[in-house]
Image 1 (cartoon, rainbow over the protein chains, first blue to last red):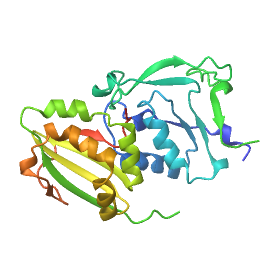
Image 2: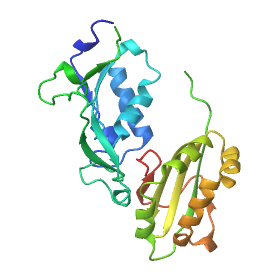
Image 3: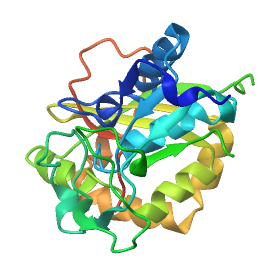
Amino acid sequence: MADTMSTRLVLGCAQLGNLDEPRTDEQARTILEAAWDTGIRDFDTAPHYGLGLSERRLGKFLRDKPRGAFTVSTEVGRLLVPDVEGASHMDSEGFAVPAAFRRGGTSPHPACAHRSRTAWTASGWITSTGS
Amino acid sequence: MAAPPTDAFAFRTRLVPGRELDYERFHRAIPTDLDRAMRAAGVLGWRIYRNETVLTHIVEALDRARMQSLLSRDPINLLWQEQVSPFIDAESGSTLDDQPSAAPGALIWDMSWPTR
C-alpha cells in the first residue's frame, strides 16, 4: 500500500507504557484491538514511554498484522541506559514502571534523527511499507 | 493466527510483617536473566498484587506443570528464591486461589515491566 502515510488519525501509544497508571498486557491489547478495528493504522510510540514497554507491547500486537498495512513512528536514537540503582524505584517521569533504565540522551549516529513532536517530519518515521 | 491454549492460575503468598516495602523495592525490576528463564519455561505473564502482607500472584503460562518443573530446577530461579526468602513468610506457605475473593490490593509488579 502506497498510501499508508496518509492516514488521518494516529494512535498515540504512551498509555501502553503505563502513562499515569499501570495497565496489563491484556488492557494494552484491548486498546490496540479497538483502534485497529476502528481502522486506525498509524501508531506513535517512543522508547521513553514506559522505558521500552510501549514499544514492546505495540510490537507484539503488530507482529501478526500485514507489514504493508500500518505505519509506526518512534523516536529513533533515544538511548535507554541500564540503571541498577534506579531499578528499586518507580519511574519519575509519569510512567508506572520501575526506573530500571535512565533516559540517556541520544545516539550520536547521524541516521538517528528525531521525530519532531510538533511537525511530523519524515526523518523519524519508520514505515513498514518497504520500498 | 490462533493463540495456543494457556494455563491461567492464581495463588497467594505472605510477606514477613514489616518487610512489605523492602520486598516491593527488591522486586520492582527483576533480573533480566530471571525474566529469560521464566519465559523459557513458558511463562507468558505474571502479576503480583499486595494487600498488606498478602501477595496475590496472577500467572499465565503455556503449561503450568512444565513451568513448575523447569523453574524448580533452574539455578537462576533458585538463586532468586533464595534472595527473596528473607521477605517471605515461609511458614504460611502458598495458597492456590484460582478465584481470589478478597481484594488483591495494589499491583506491585508485572512481568512486562522493564528488568534490571
